[in-house]
Amino acid sequence: MYSARKAMRLAAVGVATVGLVVSMNASATAAGEHTVRPTAGEWGGGWNDQRDVSIREKPSTTARKVGTLKKGTVVKCWVSGCSAVDGGNYKCTSTSPTENRWHEVRWNGKKAYAATSCLEWGRVE
Image (cartoon, rainbow, N blue to C red; front, side, top):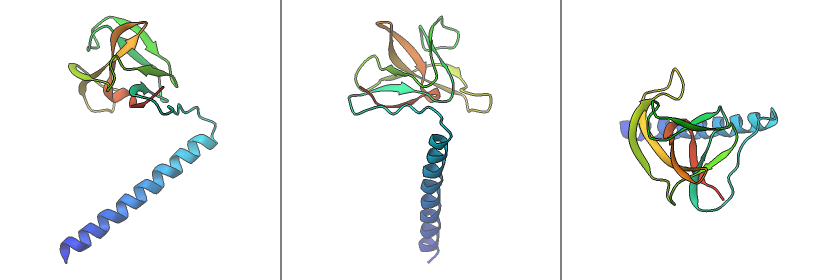
C-alpha cells in the first residue's frame, strides 16, 4: 500500500513538472525570446539561448580560447554522435555544480571543445 501511494505521488509530481516546463516554454516564446530550434538531421550539435559560451582549443578553461559561441547559435560536433571527453573543471554559472565533461566541436574547420553542461545537445542540420 505504501509503495502504491508513493508511486502515485511521484506520478503527480511528474505530470506537474511537465506542465510547468510547457508553461515556461510558452511564456518565453510569448515574451519574444529567441529560441534555437534545431531541425531534424544528424545527432550532432549544441546551442545555448542563455548566454555566450567559450570555445577552447583543449578541454580546459585554462586552454586558449579560440572563439565564442554566441547566444542563440548552433555549433556542430566534431564527429557524428557528439563524443565527450573528460577535461578541466568548470562551472556554467556561479551557482552551478562543478563539471569536467567537454564536447568535441567543429570550429573554423578544426577540432575544439565546448563545456558540455553549458549547452543543450541534440539533432541539428
